[in-house]
Amino acid sequence: MNDEADQFEQRLGRQPLKSIPAEWRAEILTAARAAQPSRHVWLSTLNSQLSTVFWPHPKAWAGLATVWVFIFALNFSMRDTSPRVAEKSAPPSPEVMVELKKQQLLFAELVGPRELSDADRQKLFAPKPRSECVEILAT
Amino acid sequence: MKMPGGNDIERLYDEHAQPLYAFLLNFTRNEPDTRDLLQEIFVKLAREPKLLAGVREERAFLIRLAHNAAIDLMRRRGTRDRTRENFAAEMISPFAPTSDPDEKVYREELAVALGELPEEQRAVVHLKLWEGLTFEEIAAALEIPPNTTASRYRYALDKLRGRLRPLYEEMKNAE
Image (cartoon, rainbow over all chains, first blue to last red; front, side, top):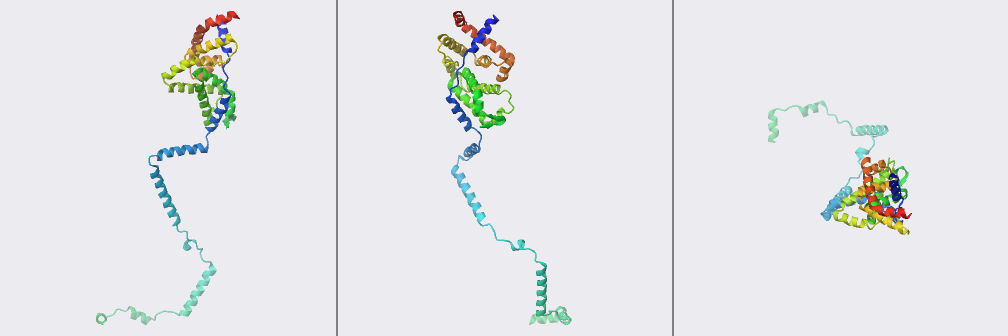
């Protein structure tokens, strides 16, 4: 009985199966290659997702984007690009400092001392009697 | 198209497409569905090359993918489509054509008898008889317990034997 069962199974197993159609190879492999992950696929996915978000009012979103681009362009064009002298100039060298001192001394000699005498200082700062103040006001 | 572990999609196709085709054709009994499922599997492998990373038995893994894809397809379809498939099951044979009239009749009868089996039994019978897998390997591929695999095989074989016995006896006597 077991022998007969084995023969039956063996006969079943000997039945040859259909071969895969040869033309499927190129078709299936082409589809598989196309599905390979790539930058292009990533971009198209991003594009489709953005389209879903922006779809309800595409013109409004485009207008808003244009306004922002205009604002950025304006901001960029008005940016102050002139060099800042105070920040960027280097500290004067010792020679320049010596020359400046010499010029100051020379200028002082030419102009002369502007010191006031003690008497003049007293005249300027001494308090006056009230009566004189009234006179000054009257004049 | 190189994949991790030296795998490339062309090699995978050349090594495994034929047995996957036979398995899917026997399971779905529908050639366009078989083609779609086969393409779905290879597209998935190309899209996710890491799927095969660390896989020891490629064939068993791919059979599992094929089985799951076929089950998904059946689920996506309703009872109406299944009725249509059962009708088509009698029409589409998974066996190679032959010029021998006796063999032709036997293959046709076997194709019909296989088509009458439940899908889960048909899958086990196919993997045991035409892929030569052990019950443990079939159990791993179909994600079912080994005991279930063995019992499904026994039930299926009893049905096939009962269905084909008259023809089998006739052919045996003729030999």
